[in-house]
Image (cartoon, rainbow, N blue to C red; front, top):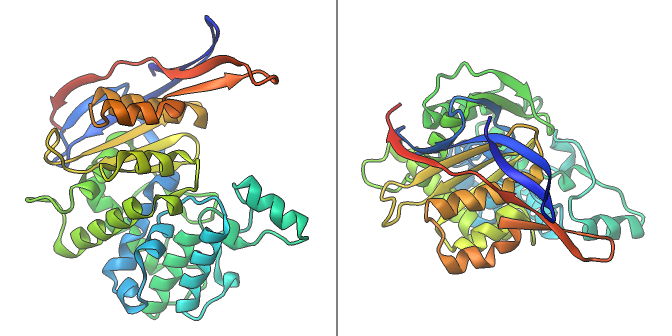
Length: 346
């Protein structure tokens, strides 16, 4: 595992984060890498855009008039702010369901402002505050549309989950017999090579390109999901969150999705430099989320996906400042790797 990110205090290197990253084209060719592209990682929340595909391809999104904003929350790891919880609740209402139908569990909102307001008012945290509530609402909507039981919809054997596995495996170039675990929200998560995650995002991002690898229904679903994420970045995380801010600053160039334990993926849409688009998958070995923003921005900088003005606006993520208790800058967290660029076939 190469060192991807260092934590410095003045001239002292205090900590190092090792990891691996891979940049894939939609045909499976690896364009760039650092470390082992076959490193196995858990997908965690990076695959939420793929978990939303059956919501669209099944016809559920159209039947229940799901808006772009609502489709975005189905792909989100949100902060639990009112705009997030209210949107997830509206999805459930379309199917005649309430918060009690969710099986994601409740946790404190990631938004401190939202959490403190609830505590001040004497309220309690509900499953709608779970960062995965939008994803689960989408799964429930799909089950209702297909006239399936909503009980146990998170089980790997449930038809909603088998449809998700089928869609993701196809885009990732994998068989459907995937190593499976249980995510923090109780839905399945999968063990896959980094190159497969990158390939899946490359194919998702290039869905609308000529000669895409997806069938017509999946390609149309992918385009709707991409449009929803790009048009509603505040739904994917929340103000100040890395995924939200990088999609805002990139202005339609990419989608970004974080996962727990420091796994992160980016889909670069087709552009002049990369006509077929790209998929990027990054895993920090020790699971430290502080290493992700510098690694992601540095990767996009070396690939020249972002221009100088965009990089300047994302400087706070590229070089994360650390401060003393007197608010004096004392160090930073920054990427220290050089991508190995050179196309290799799968």
